[in-house]
Length: 123
Figure 1 (cartoon, one colour):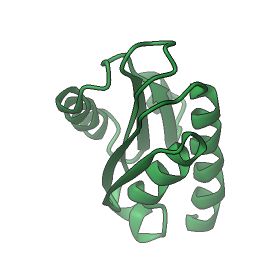
Figure 2 (figure 1 turned 45 degrees about the horizontal axis):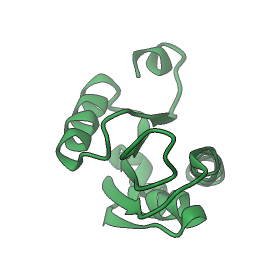
Figure 3 (figure 1 turned 90 degrees about the horizontal axis):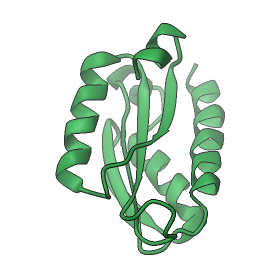
Figure 4 (figure 1 turned 120 degrees about the vertical axis):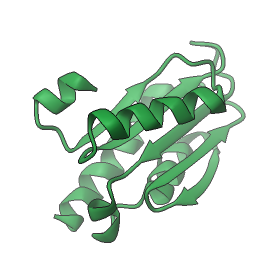
């Protein structure tokens, strides 16, 4: 996250190894908000890395970006849609999961595509 801040990135999608633990995801989101309050952050975590099983996604979006139409709940839903997952939450904070996800790279691509599309619209 610090590296993305140093590069002045406004959006970061990161695979985080926390075994799809919802309490840990909250800690990661809080840390992301603290380190990079002006950056939209999405974390992805597989229950077992490389298993193709359960995948969790969680996101935080700064108030200003959410107000401009870049919403965390829409972002999580768009990312997880590629493997049949669901999510929800608020415009500034959301999470969701998919029971099975054989291709985490496709989820990263979907998250980045949504971010690129919507960040441009929000800018």
